[in-house]
Length: 139
Image (cartoon, rainbow, N blue to C red; front, side):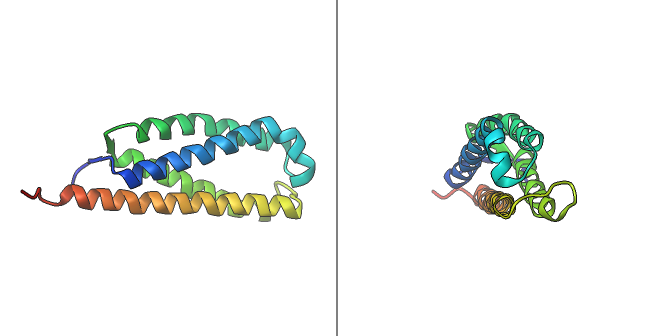
């Protein structure tokens, strides 16, 4: 089993979609936290810190997507981060840490489901890239 796979087009696109969505979320959460607080019922500090956490993540994901080959472990790390973010997004509205509005609950759950879906897509794309890499060369 190989620890590095050639970057496939689907995997690159899945990573770039993640970076774009995460970058947009980071910008929204950092720049718009003050405006969103009353609508979402989420603390400004929580939103800004979540947005700031995304900045190095976006840089890492763009770096991975730009490579001709990628470490399976690095992509698995991205997938694990996405699944952890999705799980936290599902737990946050029911926790006692915050008191989101109905719109806030919908916002957190929607982005959590989207992040989880991206993680699943990345997993499928990585698995396909690994299978293609294991196929013998034809010709």
